[in-house]
Image (cartoon, rainbow, N blue to C red; front, side, top):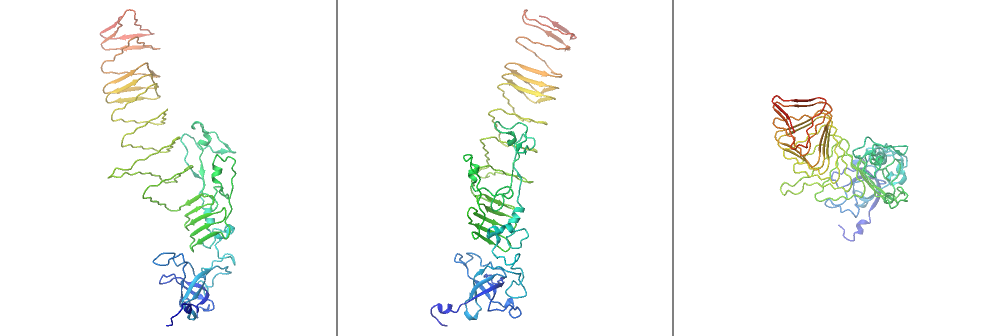
Length: 516
């Protein structure tokens, strides 16, 4: 073996242009079989593909190419044009590939001949002499892409436009009856009930949002997202006019497309800067020119954070769950007893609109404090069960308006203490049943008003005791029926005992005293 300066070995390099005909390397080294122009004939009968030499790829300096580190030595497909050299000179059995070449094919491959894809797949020619550069990287040429495009990734824009999700509804506050919307640009009147200072037609409106248009944004069909997004949303810039960006320009959009259609774009076009990653299934993430990020996942989405996560949002948040459930669970460490708490704090109104059943279970103690008024409207029945004591304190007026029956069953003692006035109005019956004592005490007046009857039944004594005066007044009859004694008495002479009416009936089999 001759020794000496390495150039002695390299000066016999033989450069070549060739076409890849096989990339299934049994050693998985990234090698491809190439047919070199001027070296191999296109007649496969003389030199079949299996007899072509394996060519090694020369990797870029940025790839370590060792121990699995760096980029994979794969990429060229059958039919790819390559440039390289034979390291063994005139022997021409050790080809090395330096790179691939872009072309503008005129026709489909002839699989029966050499210098073509043996499977006849590549090149995919839709327009004769169209450059092999993907339309995504050719600026406005992307607008000619359709769903039927056979070239990898070039149907992407049409697919994203066709599959845009629109009219996503957001939550409405309770109290509205329907969705007001607008007619001829004017809000349709709705039932009052919005908080003070808020227009009901706006407060009760059913808002929707759309998936932004691909590449340049904007929620309306065919529009672009504004570049000065902060100015047009900031009330301090009341005279700000929307300003829109440009579109991709060749050669500033750097695109990588795999043969199945996965896409990676880094667009450096002025005022059209984007970063785009697209999966052939339709899932993608795109950062648009004004900084808006659009993420769409057509499958399931999983995110695991093994420590803290902080999210700050300086705008509105809308979460819409379609035809499925939303669950929120906060667990507690069973050993340390840490965690498990949930905090919700709002400086404004809190609206909860439940259109189905609502179940609340509190296994500990519940505390509720209302600083101003509280109102509850129940269209159906209400059941309240208290296994221990119930304490109700009213510092001013308490009114109970019952249109049907009021039935109260007390198993032990019930005390009702009213510091002001207590008024109970019943259109039908009141039934008070107590197994022990029932005490009603008022600092001022107690008024019982019934449209129908009030029945008081006692198995022992019934006492009416007044410091001043007892009035019994009826527009019809007053009947007093007793099996024993009936006594009416006053403690002093000046006081009067008056029994009056159309018919006064006093019945008693033993003794009836009406004496002052």
